[in-house]
Image 1 (spheres, one colour):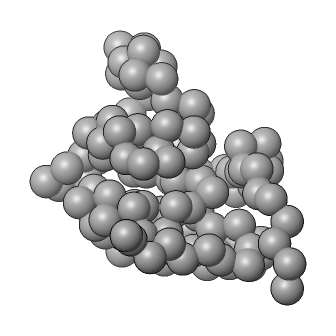
Image 2: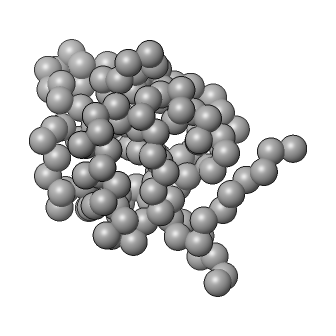
Image 3: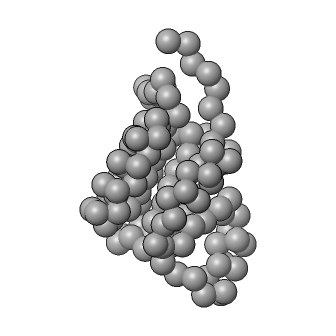
Length: 134
């Protein structure tokens, strides 16, 4: 049986291949009281998702090897993955792309550049975290 790590605060898994974006998102989330799990690409994100069962996943759409959309679909098939909110982050804004992610069932997305107050609001809306005794 797999060991499941349950953090004492809401945990957010971030997958982004851009080091600066990963660091910036991570710093922002930590300052706002979230536990952060970092992945530099989709395969790592899947492995970490299965080990940690985060409360929310933030996926960059454009990543090498396993892009954000394929990672999204794979997480949905992981144990516990059907109900975890996933927020997509993308620089793509054309109507066809947006329609595609909506059809996949993506809960929400933000476009780059990220508006930090909007990100904070979306996270608060998406995350549901049971209280854990200290």
